[in-house]
Amino acid sequence: MQAYCMKCRAKKEMKDAKSITMKNGRPATQGVCPTCGTKMITILMSTPCQGGMAFHLPVRVIGYAPL
Ligand SMILES: [Zn+2]
Image (cartoon, rainbow, N blue to C red; front, top):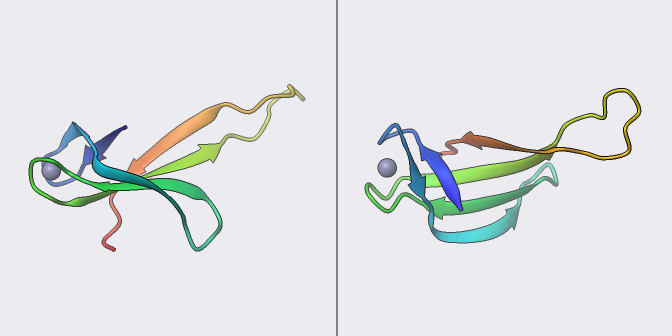
């Protein structure tokens, strides 16, 4: 699982990645940057359907959460 490290300002392979559920009920993957040890979180979201299509595109929202 790759995530963007805000400290390194680069995409890194997340270390110790684990699936979590955030307080708002959304699934996310949490891990640490292998280079600097900054905590990374990748939030898995679904975009709203457009035009009534019966599928959701998974969109990866990458950010940093000071946990
Ligand atoms: Zn880093």
